[in-house]
Image 1 (tube, rainbow, N blue to C red):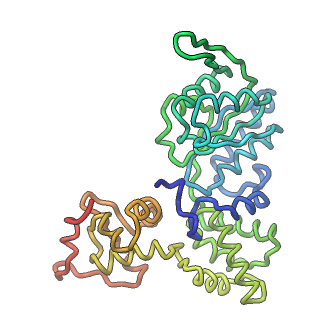
Image 2 (image 1 turned 90 degrees about the horizontal axis):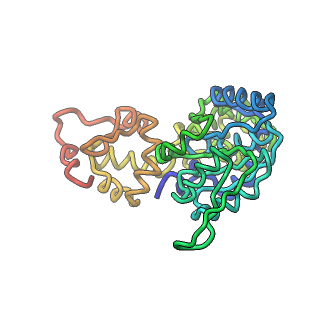
Image 3 (image 1 turned 60 degrees about the vertical axis):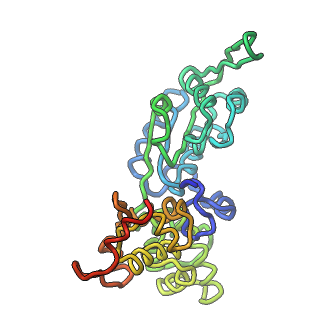
Length: 353
């Protein structure tokens, strides 16, 4: 299991589900001026695209990295729109053979944007073919097998590749080096998410006040996709249980129903923290033991729950095991055990890894 496959039944999951895909199409900004947040990436990308337009050339290849839900797909569509070019969308897992990639590349039009999501999951043979296509706009198609095989060079029209990855470290250096522009997408600040929520509310014809948007933004884990999903769930609650207007009180009550607390933790996140604090005195405790305590798979705890808890400063990974931070005790309203006061926390490093 990896971050790309994060369980989609969690309302705070960053991965897109079927409903997200349908709604996001209507909510996506159409140009860089509408795009909220990512100021450095947006300004740098604006220069790259304007310069390419002035030269009358295709834009440099672009690599966008960052966690799911931060806007990589949206930016790829904006790049195509800004360049006045069509866009072709595919993903790394869909390209398992060099022939799959050759078929896509050979059908591209001049100036077309090829968006390759999860580029780090592309097969190695296809990856090696991509090197030549990006640099020389040419691929060698192998015809035949064995000693009689022949490489036929195929010229490609100039195109712009936009690669997106949640794990830039898995990309080999020869591939990374062929991108003319690399942008890293950061998590959003609460005030940026408030702007995202107000914009989405207008498009969804939802009435929301400033305090209501702030309440949702504070629980959205720095991710616009999660903010939009929470907005839709709060809208449903406001429509059924209130007068349709989203205020701070309505948003807080609605998200309590969906088990999303003030810092954006959901049931799984709190279960991990509660087990760590109440059963193991704050740790250190091995990952396997912690997973058993919450009734989840080891991979689920490590790859789904822990990244956000670590980023929020509520949990730390140490050589001896997982350890709760003072902020975790405060968040759950618990009092940490006093040093030398006994307890079993010192033994937990013996269990699991």
